[in-house]
Amino acid sequence: MLKRHYTEVKEDAPSLAGTKGCTVQWLISNEQGAKRYAMRLFTLRPGGTIPLHEHEDTEHEIYIIEGKGLLDDSKEKIPIRSGDVLFIPAGEKHSFVNQTQQTLKFICVIPL
Amino acid sequence: MLKRHYTEVKEDAPSLAGTKGCTVQWLISNEQGAKRYAMRLFTLRPGGTIPLHEHEDTEHEIYIIEGKGLLDDSKEKIPIRSGDVLFIPAGEKHSFVNQTQQTLKFICVIPL
Image (cartoon, rainbow over all chains, first blue to last red; front, side, top):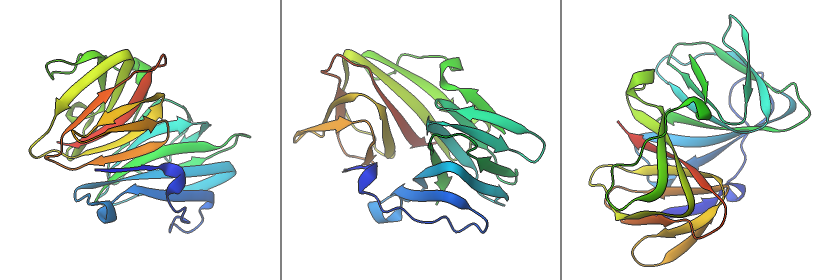
């Protein structure tokens, strides 16, 4: 069994080009013994952006921990807030913007 | 893409015998189109307990959203708190107790 606080986990810059004001922490992944899916924590600072993109084979299961923002699914801008749950199937476009003055944090689980 | 707030999701009683003061909400599962893993939200009220148990083939990836409690892995009682991340591999015993006066909430992702 592994226990650690999220603040002990290294903050990385996401690999997606055009991402701004954003870090990702791989909370649980291969290194911790996970084989089927990984849990990541994204932090999007005020003004931060994850640009529109999609993943061919990778769905997202997301829980908003803290803050507010906008999710753009390429058709509309959808307000998101703490306590919201998002399921983004593989192949669906998505982007995130934090247009507020508070930090936005969300858990995002992806297949390994 | 699905978006909903966790408060819109039905609260169920967990099936594990001996569980007290606890609800589980299946935030994302088969019904929402998930095929590989499910995201659930557990709420353990003050005095609530999930008794010691294990799962033969099912690992848990857990993020503590709110509150504090104790995780018993059958060897020791480990304090847990908001922001803690737990990886419980298949076959490892675990129980949860909320011995505090505040609600304990955690996300728990399992394979489907």
